[in-house]
Length: 395
Image 1: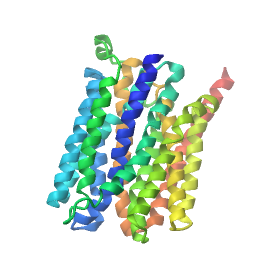
Image 2 (image 1 turned 135 degrees about the vertical axis):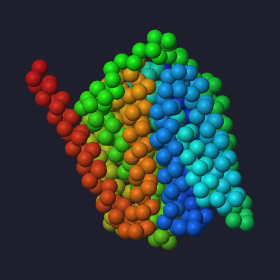
Image 3 (image 1 turned 30 degrees about the vertical axis):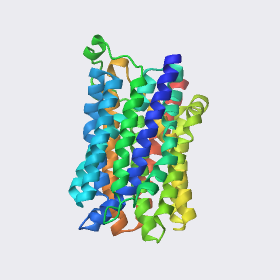
């Protein structure tokens, strides 16, 4: 019990460094891309490169950690964070748009490793504590919600002469180094030789289970919709004549909405059931869209992004907890890798779509485009609820 609590604390702190990195990148990179891109419609391509980097490395990251252990694997990921920050800083110095894309892809490698923090906490916890372990680990992102936007504001403009966005990327190198130090305190045993050799069921068999389908859909669509709207928000606010500090304020509250509920989401899952929590998240995301469509004042952006954060939390924590039900210990690496690959693939598509939708059709198109996918997640969740009720009735 003491070991699992310590691991959750360490991983929650690491999650905070990951989130500081993520929110700083979201706050700065769209604007940095806009500043140095010859074609302004490509301004979100660096963020898309970030997601693509995460997508292509999520499977290798999981397999590497299965071979060398969680602690060593996470430290490799943090080293990518240091390298990615350096490449992005060089790109700003040289005003090279495509080098910025390359640096953001390397930053995506860091994120791919870091997204397994939640699963590492669950894997090392007792069954009854798994949902809370995931939830409390993600709660560490709350620190990122406070400090990420502040760091973006404090460092943006620190250098003059066309180097407005240089300092934020330099600061992220330090954040990744902090993660490497924190990870020295992680105490999760390496997989045994038997666990590494044993493969369990074929992946196709695991992925065709109704529980996997719903867990993956909830994770994919919660992240896809959240990413679509979040990456568009700073540019939409700029287009509606809001100050950069207003955008940073809105993103700060969005991050608080994403991670503050994690202190009790695990308890809500234990009390009301994981599917009810996921469904509630879908409803909260609908509230977000309504708020975004009713106006473009600061209050509308603030309410929309706050509700988007809470809705994402309920859906994503619920999806992560649901996924732990579908695999045996020997199947963890490939099941978690498949799930997160699908999530990052969805994020890559949503990132690429956000800039095009915003530039070609406007902020309302971004919101309307999210509705069908949100309804798909809600319908899939209710389908699994019906299946489980039918199974209980049959027994």
